[in-house]
Amino acid sequence: MGNAQSPFVAAAGGVRVRVKLAPKASRDALGGVVLDADGSAAYVKASVTAAPEAGKANAALIALLAKAWRLPKSAITMVAGASARRKTLLIAGDPAALIPRLLRTLAGSSEEG
Image 1 (cartoon, rainbow, N blue to C red):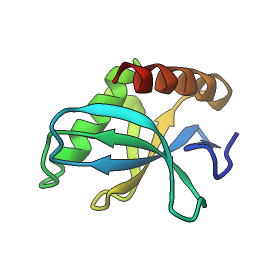
Image 2: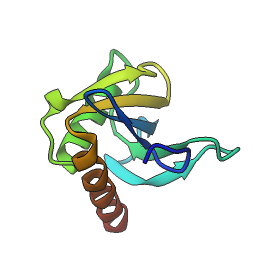
Image 3: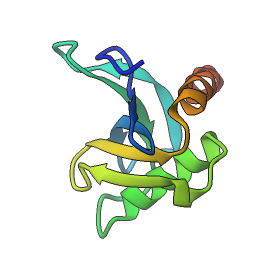
């Protein structure tokens, strides 16, 4: 379940999620899954209204993911890319249960808007 076509990778203690963030957007939203130009990696597309300063966009991203995926914010940790648009987050929990749930929720959110 952790190949280049999926933004979700099972990891020790949870699931790593690759996210491509657009800060200073017109609204907070999750999009679908997007691929790098060369197709080497998949990312969850996300946008937040917060500016990328003093960690505001990162905090907004974690809040957005927590709300969309019905998880406590404390279950989501930024593990790479804190100052980049491409980020890796760790969601604490059982990967076998989390990955299908996250995929279902992501599919639903991309249809909503």
